[in-house]
Length: 481
Ligand code: SF4
Figure (cartoon, rainbow, N blue to C red):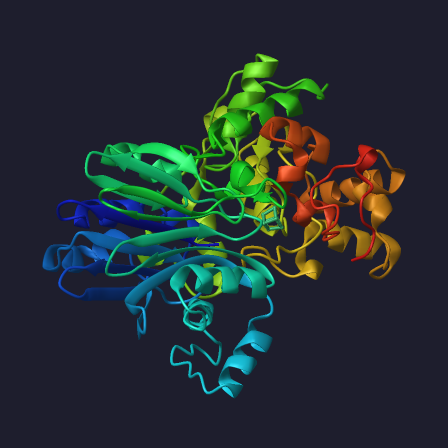
């Protein structure tokens, strides 16, 4: 996914823009971008796969000043898009994914609209959104036009000469928070961007809500709706930063509650609990709080000096870097029975080769993997962070057990079914750990603590849109892959 940030200030906003955007660096690995409005809009975009945001934009931050700006850390397209239009020049940043972009762009091209930001033969979806906006008679209707016509999910920030529009689509899968301090108004995907800038969270945009702000304050343009909200649950479990809150619910506290729930249903005897660094740490702390086991670190992450300059293009080299980053501490591992908390298992290859194997090699006596969510069954349709269906560890397990990919997988979604148990056992054997348990969907939702109908859980439960994340007892909801 991507992270977006915007700020309007009575004075120069560059410091807020620079750090506020940088605090979204965990959300993307492809492009970073800033646009600031002084007398005119200045924009710079860099590939962040080959360098850290702070280093790459240091020159830009010292060269330009202005009272409004937008920034993005993008896992997808180069952004911000800057266009000259009949509404004046504007800069646009977006997060999310449009799945009917091909069809929408073909229609626009047939009307004579041109696209200039083609990358590797692929359309830039932020440019598509800009082109959809300028079809309407004003910006508000233009943004509504986008939300009415897209399939997928988008949140956006749009900077004009007068101020900044912030909007979430009808599902608000990817939240936007508004924050203020004296003479400054800001919007961010991650609330963790605010405190060190002295900004306090004012509100979270609701589904379909649109506001306009400048340094003087916030004006409501389109009200939010209760129906249709479907916030990405994965933000709390893995993708969001621990210091962030969504809907006022802290990511770190949800992770602690996940760990507590894992501990409550556990009966194994162990010597210590740890997390797979860093994203399993909050879950492990919760497990330790509930179980009374000591939280210790048989594995630590060596981050110093790696940064993004070492983020390489191929999976093979990425695995090599991941391998070099995680260091076992043999004096803690040797002879110990370990509870190892992990946020989720996607493919499982890194967990198997880079974590579990290292713990065995360092002399662990038992390795019990505890996962803070159910088995991932479906790739995300709303961002590009998960892979194809076939790559998912749970789907490989099902294919192996069924000798092919069955059309109906509903029994495997039911955590109480015998098939689900066999699937988990297949994954355990593949990983090579002593035992493996997952949280159920109900347990995970309880840890988040919001009504389940307000949450997206499609990567665990499937794309029965009518049901969204409404959890049915036993996990049965959808069955088609
Ligand atoms: S499918 Fe999963 S990752 Fe995608 S928005 Fe829904 S909960 Fe988040």
